[in-house]
Amino acid sequence: MAAADTNDRYYTLEVASEAIYRVKGSKFIGFAYPVFSEMEIKTQVDLLRKEYFDATHHCYAWALGADRNKHRENDDGEPSGSAARPIYGQILSAGLSNVLIVVLRYFGGTKLGVSGLIDAYKLAAKACIEEGKIVERFEENIIIIRFSYAEMNVVMKLVKDQELQVIDPKFDLRCQLHTKIKRSKSDELLFELNKLKGVEAEIDFS
Image (cartoon, rainbow, N blue to C red; front, side, top):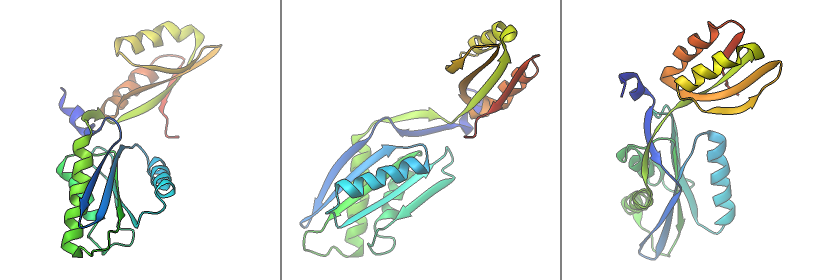
């Protein structure tokens, strides 16, 4: 694998997973999700709050980006550092990104203390990660390619040679399609496309 690809590579969960951890009457339900945006994270947390409205706490942590440049923790009323931090610690320990872990707590009547909470949230998060399957992924950019009909063969040959996926093609007098490519290779592709006569290409930031 080319060295530049390592900048895009990350590990996440293939699909959502969950697990239950019980201690001294309290029940901790852990949910882990592969995610790709803050909006997706908010939607998932809101859905869990609605479905498990009777849970005592809804604590979570998440990380986005191959280098985890975006991340957040929420203790949801538990003592500071006793819930979300150990959850995030398990994300780091497993080497994951683009992942959300939510741990719900149903209080069982016996206080666990800060150290007990740290252990419980840590083990619940660890358990739901272990229930899932970790997969390798690469960060990608979506490229918009616009070209005249006369340039279709040239563009499609380049797309085929680089084994790119064609998304939402529109072929008319003025054609357009989207494709995905590893972030580290985006500039190279843009350069190759934009030097073609009648072709315009740019990253889709929408």
